[in-house]
Length: 92
Picture 1 (cartoon, one colour):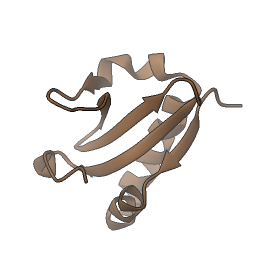
Picture 2 (spheres, one colour; picture 1 turned 30 degrees about the horizontal axis):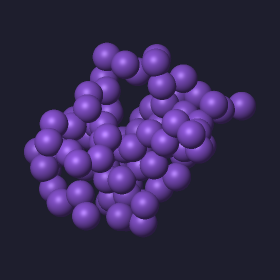
Picture 3 (spheres, one colour; picture 1 turned 90 degrees about the vertical axis):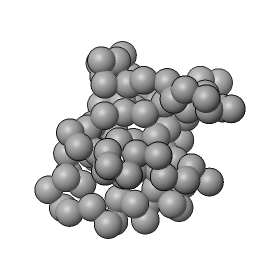
Picture 4 (cartoon, helix red, strand yellow; picture 1 turned 135 degrees about the horizontal axis):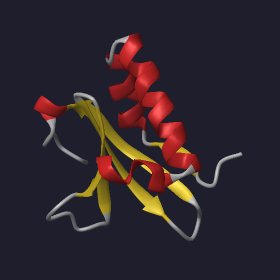
């Protein structure tokens, strides 16, 4: 039973498909933890500076997950997933 519901933008789904299976598994596990207890990952979560919306990034090894937490709807919207070297790719 999770506290938050995970929703993915189409771009995030495409990003995840491009990542090798071993890292996909780790990323999916971290996303489940994020949905159940966001506070458990607080050391790996930072607010993105300069974002117009309240966007955050979750660090999972060499990968970064950009997400938005919608408190009222209890939804975590996954926006992009990428390698840290591609950290500042377009968020549109």
